[in-house]
Length: 238
Ligand code: AP5
Ligand code: MG
Image 1: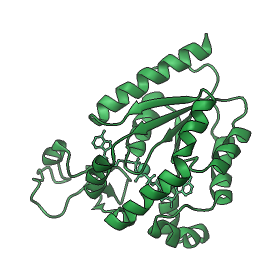
Image 2: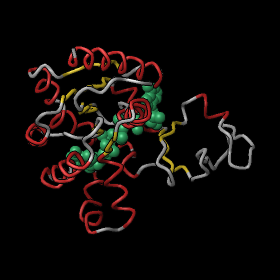
Image 3: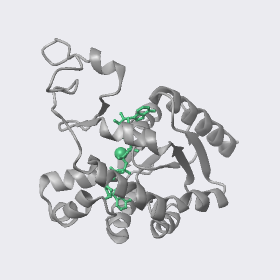
């Protein structure tokens, strides 16, 4: 997809766990040629590599709590400072009012749009209990997807849904995220309601909110997001 880039848009994906932020961030980055940062992926990678930051946040992630604001703000400020030319997608930041205020300070001069993806909680539980993530490339899968039955394995054969060891199309092993256990999902949803959901009103008040229904296929959601974003970017550049 080709969009004109007048100015430098900064697009936030906001929504509860399982809303499809990561799925849409991936598509937007590919479709618009923008840089994305998925803060949860970045933290999990630090944990997997056993870095000092990874060791510090490991237990927080396992419990489904939020990492302290100062750590997250430093990471994102640094990312924005180094990736400004075209456009930036923030998947999973901000998640608190303090983070939103920090973003406001460091995003001066950029056009900030916040896409709030709304999905009912029963659907979230259904999606997260069937999510699998590739250990090698990070691609997000879901056992509920029909496409699953037709996914080629590296040796050219096809899995069927009854087979035990699912693999990504890159050949990587597909794993369940540590925080996708039912009790941790419930806790993450509670944290979302308390600490992150108030940001919807925060951005609505600033006229920066784009509300998108997150049900329907990932393609349906992507089309809605693109339509709304294009409209905002065109208006902003005229
Ligand atoms: P993070 O990794 O960001 O987790 P999250 O916000 O809980 O969101 P998820 O990644 O679980 O869901 P998603 O919305 O990306 O959905 P996805 O596209 O995968 O954060 C993890 C942890 O890191 C936090 O708990 C916290 O500890 C820490 N952290 C991160 N950022 C932080 C911050 N700023 N401050 C403090 N701490 C922070 O989709 C879910 C599933 O549904 C997939 O299987 C997908 O295939 C499927 N799916 C997607 N779209 C659709 C659709 N339209 N229809 C059907 N299925 C779909
Ligand atoms: Mg995600």
